Image 1 (cartoon, rainbow, N blue to C red):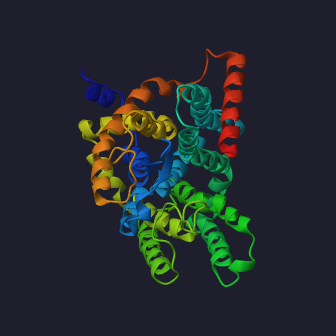
Image 2 (tube, rainbow, N blue to C red):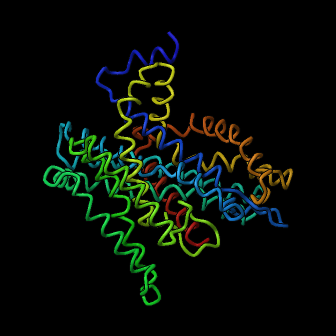
Image 3 (tube, helix red, strand yellow):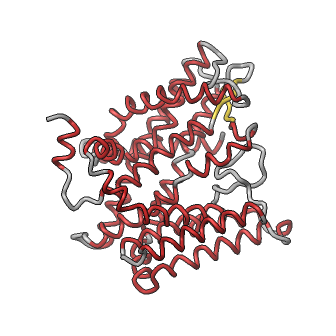
Length: 396
């Protein structure tokens, strides 16, 4: 029996394959987006610096609409949390501690490993600028884990809100982000404090999670999904055409405004449209994933979810850093992302990045399992290393 057949045989009949498929799609969009929309420049001293093709090619912005799938990820997360919370055998506190531990171990692992790597790489001759760039890239996706942990902790409140108010429970979150956007971008923007945008961080990402909770509580069906899809598309178009929101869903170097950090109303509009489409396509996707050859990759991606999130930037750096030291400027890897030739070359590098991620994942997946053999001393050492890495990133 080969791997595909073993996975099919071990899949319970009641498994919701469509939800797992949506999660896998959203997971794979994260490294794909970072690898395609992030690049490097090489300074005369050989140091790597972050750059983006969106700076030179604004017409690539629609690519970010497709690859920005965190709304789907939070939607599916809310749905799965409802099922897990409803089926728990212990207290709500025990359930939450288990969920947070599964999120925290991989983050602690990657930051601890990088804390050890930094002095080793510096001693090996890697420029300090490259190490600062690499550290920034490693931390870049980890903010998501912190936000996801917070919204997970709010699951009991989200469940109660969904049961009482249905889909309307998500409306105040949308309204909150709209008010903050009006204050920071409207006629009074000049007198508003710079920290105001931070107020969008929690409601901005909790919105899609609450939609997922409503879905899990069966308060989001076909009619509501059509409303989300149509309303999200309409709001998205109005924000772009009338209110001048940036077209890119990710930050563009040199631009004063960004949609994602923290999320703007445009992100919520996209999340609403994506969520509506996901609910409407659920049955078709589930039927498609009844094919074992398609289902097996979905299972493997889901089993490595946190490894993919935490280590995909390391995989790209594992290719770029050695090349920058030995070969200098190489198209699509260490050259500025300012030509169409760079785009073609970067596409050619993606299989290597993916292969390195698979290789790294063979060892890094251990961080997703309970650390039964490390003991209290080992966990404390990992925590200290992770804290040291965080200090370096903040200082850089």
